[in-house]
Length: 415
Ligand SMILES: Cc1cc2nc3c(=O)[nH]c(=O)nc-3n(C[C@H](O)[C@H](O)[C@H](O)COP(=O)(O)OP(=O)(O)OC[C@H]3O[C@@H](n4cnc5c(N)ncnc54)[C@H](O)[C@@H]3O)c2cc1C
Image (cartoon, rainbow, N blue to C red; front, side):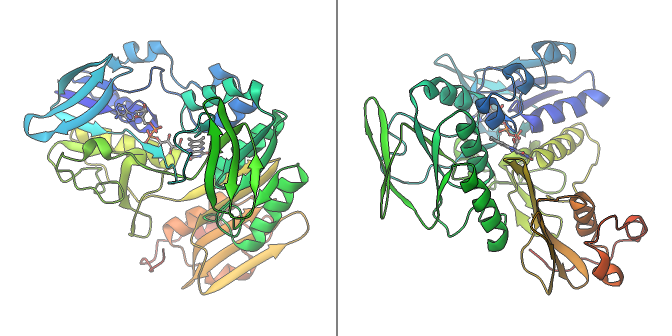
């Protein structure tokens, strides 16, 4: 059997490794537009900051592919899919050709969103932080930079701002909404994060949609909001990511916010699977969503790989978990931010919150002390009834072993 995988990220490699555990005969071809072996984008900000070395980003070396008998086509861009002829058209060094498959896995990930702001896509010196090439380009530019603007205060925006400050750059963080980490935290949590950013010298502007990026051929000179102009020689646009489905437009694949897949990572077309950041599928509570995280990519990649070779493996649902450390302050959140009951514990060092609905945990936010968040997450995923121990849930050293052994209850509705 000829298996073709588009991508060389964690979803693609997890799929290839799962296939090779059980099937040494099928051919596997990985197709990637990038030129390097598998690396992790998660520490890219630390790489810019120079606290992580370039070689430590790589999770597999070139030998891995030959040892696993995987053909790795790098610098090959997939441009279209024709399910009728079972072929993916790719372009390499200006030449287009077809690669045929018996089974196809689409694991080509997400792309950084560039808001429609004049100048953002055209003025030199504006970067995203999505790939290793992006990080290298930022590092190359840093020699000319005294001031930078980071647009967007999600976790990549915050990590970028921190990295630039640690490289000696004066940073202004600009957020369109009324708080930092707007998708992750309630206002009182965000206030603590903002205070921390400010104490490390970052100027934070909230309620400030960017109107224009100004500059000329030699680079960006400033960023304009409704009420001010911020001088800068570098911009990092960190306005989120979305599944990169443009190349699949005419394929007949069912595409909503991402490539829609069932719990076997199967698409609406025969013998075509998808996994990782590009997919839209059910969450832990049954609702359909797109949640681009490393653990979701590895798990869905593995499940896709096993189903491709005929093993019936089912996915339990996407989990949305965010963990970030900003100037040594740990922050984590998961699930939703509203429910019937809100449990909060706080002092000057930490703020911890659980959201309870119909006796079950449906979300949590932690800052300063994130201990236990993995266990709360597991209780949420298993929908364990925590009513009997609700008052003690946030107390230090509370043992949850007894609760975890309880059988799951029927699911309740929650986002
Ligand atoms: C800066 C940063 C920090 C992050 N930090 C965290 C974190 O702390 N925790 C966490 O859980 N997640 C984090 N993530 C998200 C995590 O990295 C992704 O969820 C994960 O990498 C997705 O894996 P994937 O295999 O689906 O896609 P990707 O890792 O994006 O890989 C996609 C692959 O497809 C290839 N490709 C794309 N389009 C084409 C095409 N048309 N033709 C051929 N090849 C193509 C690419 O070259 C690449 O090899 C971070 C992401 C970034 C950018």
